[in-house]
Image 1 (cartoon, rainbow, N blue to C red):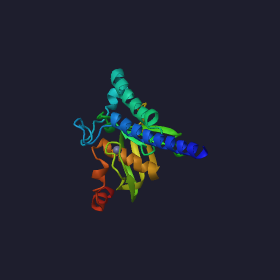
Image 2: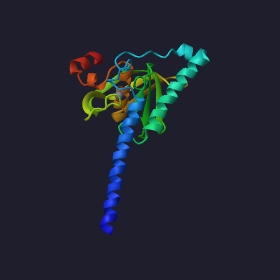
Image 3: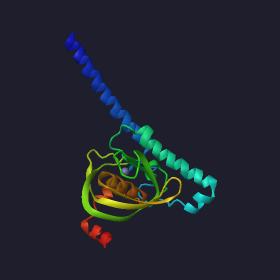
Image 4: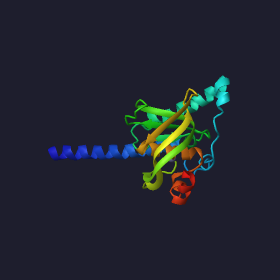
Length: 206
Ligand SMILES: [Zn+2]
């Protein structure tokens, strides 16, 4: 009797695992542009800058950008809350060719409360500490993460969701996620970034 109960419990647990995995993967494929998709028009090209003059003067344009920001944070929070590998999302991932990214902040970053950060027109203005990070992508869903050259520390200039200019420094995994998402805004996937060699990095450091 006890054995039967234990077996039943195991079976339930296994079914739950299987179900969750499938649900999560199909959930991503429903909402995130896939690299091989016939509709992939945004993953391999530089995305559009958000026009910050229009953002501040034209309410309809601002509403459009606000709704993109809300959609990206929705994808991070409501949809993939428990999908541990998704730490950031870009407009390109969502099929929206604007330079907007949203990043999960799950560490006690000194200047950002827990939650998320939205960056409009993010640009990495300084970087240091060349390293490499195992990485995967919601638009590629590689069977195994691949090693991508990344910087340990980056400083990013961007506009926040209210349109205010910000400059912030990040390090570690958070810095790596930001580099991944900023790459997306420039049409670069991790499979492209993995091919970068040190010569490329010497060029940008100079
Ligand atoms: Zn990605």
